[in-house]
Length: 397
Image (cartoon, rainbow, N blue to C red):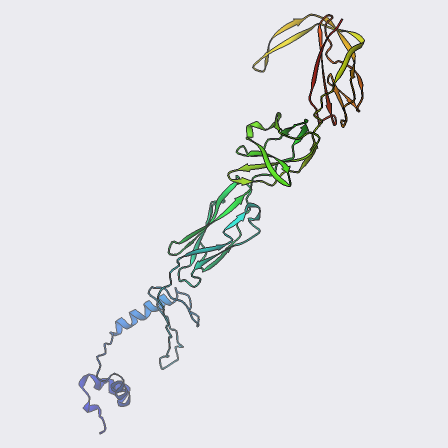
């Protein structure tokens, strides 16, 4: 049966007259049996204007797959103005349940202070395909935060720093969108100390140790025994300094020893100092046979004004009158030579060689009729390997 315009409901007659009976038949075929709402002409122009403004404010969506999070999205479709038929677009939407990040893992989780700026720390969400991303990096040493990240994997090499006290310190904290965090640590070792000045006795060693750079640093004096470094004594910062020599005892006579220092602070040890090798002296005392004065010299001391100091200022002067004293040259004779020594200390004078007699000037001298003290000891050298001391007192005439 051929459909005519006169057969149409009144509201469709004008459409058929305007568009033709064939186009009206197409509308019946497409929308027959359904309810269709048509905007007014005014509303159509209003919505078209709004969508045109929106399209100018959003970025163009390039073809290809894209991950969408829960939100409202607008698809702006632009077609050529001359196109008569509307364009057809196909969207393939695939979805899955949100994969939460259970945490963050880092490699390495600790780094040495000297490696900051040289080695990268790689952080990754757990699982690696989580929909939660790493979005923030906080550097504890510099106090700076970077929030430009949005990825499952982030690498970071940090800002070089040297102003960190010895110890294990928080360095970088990585944070995800759901608040999971992981903090890496930087290891700042204690400093390497300078090697000490050492003087050995026959059963001991005396150390002059420079102050460490950090006040909270302790110093370990170590001795190599049977192939193993052992700590003989530990001293604090205030016990250091060249005016505070430190002595360790319990060493064997005529034995070569290796010594070193190692710093310790906040659970961290520094690299050992350079090794000092010294030999201990002989334990044999010199057997003195006699001490004789072989020469005298009269010394006159002129008077002078002695200063008295209080609080760094001279408070008064005191006159010291002139006086005389006698210097003595003495000859010390031993009962026999002391073997395995490099020389002898006699009254503060170093005399090289193992001999049976030694002749020296006594530095301080004495008044006539007073007593003169002579101290004698062996040594391997002028500054090390001292043996036990013998003290003799003679009366001068």
